[in-house]
Length: 117
Length: 108
Figure 1: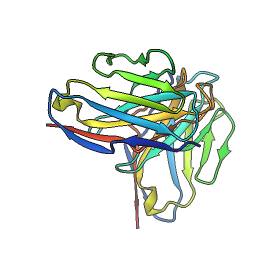
Figure 2 (figure 1 turned 90 degrees about the vertical axis):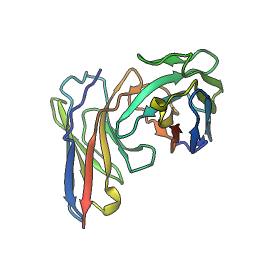
Figure 3 (figure 1 turned 135 degrees about the horizontal axis):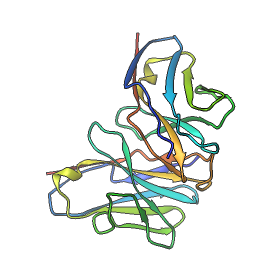
Figure 4 (figure 1 turned 60 degrees about the vertical axis):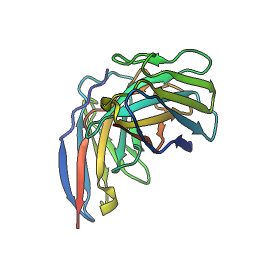
């Protein structure tokens, strides 16, 4: 398994500002993902964070709004830019230590609870 | 994509077995079925996964039908701490695509 730390655990932000969320893993992992969970909803994949290259975004998510960095195999950041109240959600980091192959397990951080006023 | 269908909610008595069904009729031959759960205010927790054989670990058992169109997660002795949303997920192109899940409430 993998131990995942997310910072901050929660934050309250003003609209129009940006927040950067950090995800730190205790070991090198192949795959890192970012998810959003809106209030009362299930998880939606935002993007795959690729080490050394641009992130791969899912339909409906764009780099300008959710820039992602992944400088090495243990760390990634997600920025929520120009926030509005609709961005109030839980943002979760997930890692796949053994890659994207079938049968591999992904592990999740505790999430960052963001409220935008 | 391996789309899954689960009942929105179910109740279970403490100490009894909880049987959670999942339909995944569009799953392809090499797509695993994963089960996760999310206890309130926490990140999803991995439970178990399987391809076509039944699987068992310290948390649960997974029964997959021979045609792989459905599966059942079995919590053998439910406790109050098992109250959570349970997700049955097909792994598609290395990505977990979450559905709505089943809200399981374990009652004393």
